[in-house]
Length: 335
Image 1 (cartoon, rainbow, N blue to C red):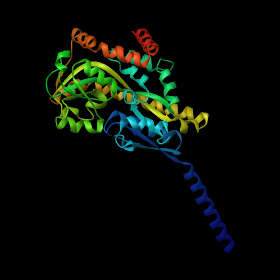
Image 2 (image 1 turned 135 degrees about the vertical axis):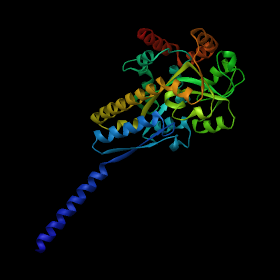
Image 3 (image 1 turned 180 degrees about the horizontal axis):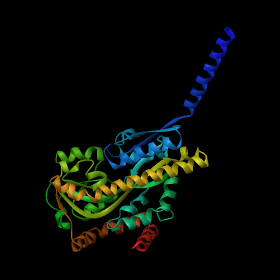
Image 4 (image 1 turned 30 degrees about the vertical axis):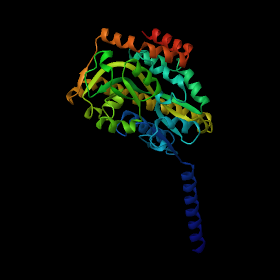
């Protein structure tokens, strides 16, 4: 009886030890992104976490931190933290990384793109965006997949925007350095500001307006509650990407690396899909919410394109003429 009791105790101890060892193998990874938990950014991040848990049978778990919490609300700092290995994953937009890698501004050059087919041609595997993966890798960031912030539209509380002249004198919140030059070209007064500060600034009248995509930001962040006018001018496109600490990525074996890429691609495909769906129905939704929405004619868009050409040329030189040419070539082939 005593031997049997000890045998059972030994077996139980062995099982507990085994379970403890399994638990010790599980790791919790952290992902930081720019926006609130009601956005398609957050939904994409959560989908990534779900897929990661499924594919690893729980050996990998993901904690998602919205509003750049782990970087003290500083959107720009997140990528640097990932590059230094202080953070596992970042989901951020190309324009937010331009202080670290100015070539990332190529996506957002004013009026570079006209439609999603052109966008997809540049971010597809083997497309010109591969050069940016290489540059970010040198900064310690492994780009796992591209997602979508979208075409950026302008909102304000002062007047409808139908021409470049309507932008003159408006205090505009902008997300990154390239947009400072674009707004200056239009005669506006740009103020670079973290997104976490922007809604309060709009409510208090610190700035008159801002520019952001409809499906990814304007609707889920309820910008329509603090802005009365929107012009769908599609003046700039902004992708997001799911990046990982290269140091962390390199520590995994080839099979795990391939799994991470597959899971990230699936999650970002989902994020892109729901963003575009939200954008497609967004104009009608915003009108229902009381916003005055203006859709410029082709002639009016050409006037905006002409007005922003100096900023295009300035930033095309900064990001590199060869890189811009490769994007334009892919865009031309997509038409």
